Amino acid sequence: MIVCVCNNISDREIRQAVDLGISSVAELHRELGVGTMCGKCVSYAREVLTEHLESKTVVTELRRVAQAA
Image 1 (tube, rainbow, N blue to C red):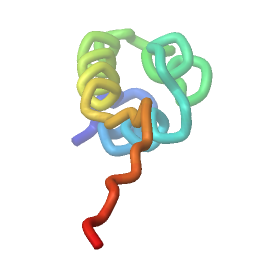
Image 2: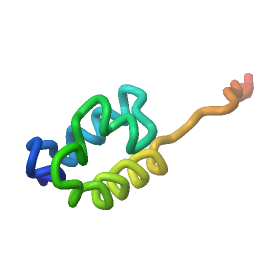
Image 3: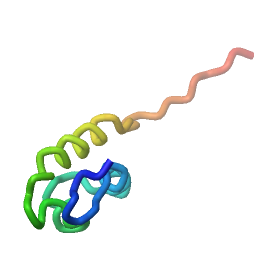
């Protein structure tokens, strides 16, 4: 779905940007041009960004389970 009509930016592109390290609307603005024209897309872009950031699994600890012999 197109999020930013002015710059033809899709929700998929925003998710890919998050996967590549983007973590703020300011970075989306700078890197993809989201919200640089009319600005109507900013709230939805923020929603897509936040949802995708929250859905990412972060591994904070790795444990090896001992197997029974």
